[in-house]
Length: 482
Image 1 (cartoon, rainbow, N blue to C red):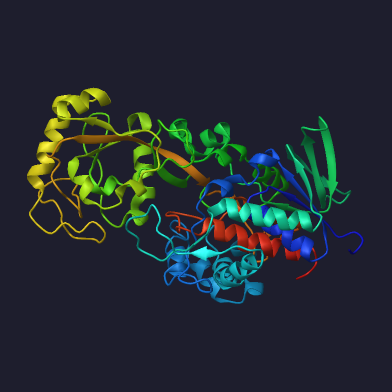
Image 2 (image 1 turned 30 degrees about the horizontal axis):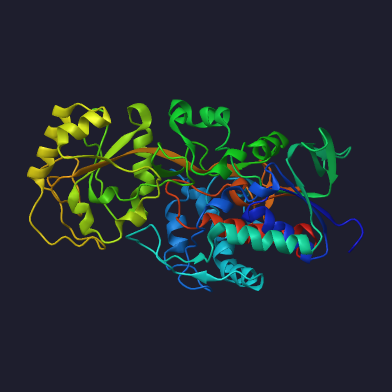
């Protein structure tokens, strides 16, 4: 091991572990700082299926780059975007620091996805296109057998074999800097030692976003943040210190700080990711008993984020999914609901309204108006069947069956924060850039801490982003590349 090649990684999810393993494989002495205990290490990765937007283990999906670039930012200045057609070295500083989805970063993500999965396979990870909770899909996905837990176990095991020093219950609080202000490491608060401890080396921030920080969510999301909770236990550990430290250092931001990746969940449930994804086969009503959205404008994977965000903006941040007995015509619908709480059931709509605390007359009227707008046609639950309503607003574009056959079933739905969009501006080597588009020496970011997303989340790319840029950051920080 070369003398002086030290790397400090903050975070122990897919990004931090990929960084740690790649740096250690390149011969660096690596320390990983993790807020959680060893038993709960793994961040959000530990709790996810870890879907990846791939058509094979070697190639990303056909819509991969296009979807990212269609959601690159809001009202971007075309004169600045046009500069990205030039070689990166010739980009003006304001473009390098611009808050948008950088095509250089996306190109690297697409190019390195296959090789990164190949690298993970050498650690014993297997991939599959097994059935998921997404009953309808608009793109291709695969996932590791065993989900995110398998990724955490394989990478952490390899890191331990390589001698990586894990410091659990330890949280980074500030950068170490030399007399010239250059980053030289991290100072962290250790639960075991009860004091601030210094860790020297190049720094890789892979400590997530801020979905576990109510104060930061209120700062960026406003009043609606009061109804948002992390989608899984790992998110509670992501409290934004890494972002705040880097922004205070002068790092440029990237990703939409006013938005997050939203998932519709059952707020009654305490299990990890208690999603309710069968809303396309019923109607959604607010607390007044009124419909407010087209429940089936597209396949569920394409619309669930917008549905969850819209619910978050409703009074009380809650909606109710109303289905009837014909839900059972959707084979395997139970796969699309992961709450451990049973649906609220009743033999009549007034009884159902009473159990939900809704106005019975309003709900009855909403259902009657909806039923009157439905049409005869072929119900095909696993494809966009065009079985739509007519003469009603909002419409329902597909799978519009009458809600008429008891027993009636309902689920409350709120919006959960899977991860935050706002993060740090990085180049394709995962180096953090300052507000002038210059590299902040010795500082890298990967995973959620690296800002990337605007508008709609490009589904099944978050874990992939963490693996790809974590690996790149580790190799670069160790001196193996660049």
